[in-house]
Amino acid sequence: MAEMGGLTGVERTFPDNDIIVSKTDTAGRITYVNDIFLSIADYTEREVMGKPHNMIRHPDMPRCVFKLLWDTLGTGDEIFAYVVNRAKFGDHYWVLAHVTPTFGANGEILGYHSNRRVPNRQALPTIKELYARLKAEEDRHSDRKAGMAASTAILLGLLKEKGISYGELIYSLENS
Image (tube, rainbow, N blue to C red; front, top):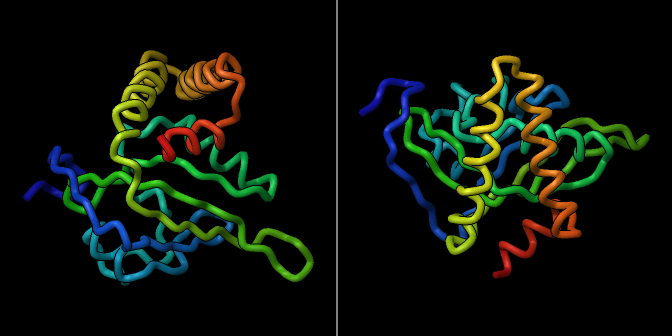
């Protein structure tokens, strides 16, 4: 078993009908997780409650995708995204995440709700190639902000070239 935080290269999978659920406050701290989340991520409820949701972020995940996610959520919109997460002892698992803001009575954003399900396995080679390209661009820069700006420009340029939004890209991959 790898030490906490290290990577094993082992991919975890979960049944097609399982849905991983988590909720966070507006700062991204976990306020709720279901048993499927705990099982696949290998954490206990006590270990995750109140912690930053990015505790399960895999280091191969490009930061520009999370920037797009947070920018989208900040406008009050939902987003679908392919995400690779890291389990407690270094295994990883791919999900198709659907993240939505949770609104209060006055329309203010109170937090976020994420449902994650098994992704289209046929789409993963395309996503892995794109994410590797974006992550390599981020890593090429010594300044993290410059790296994220450069990878964001690549992603937005690709979408513009295809004439589609990020949501349309994910939809097309999920339904291919």
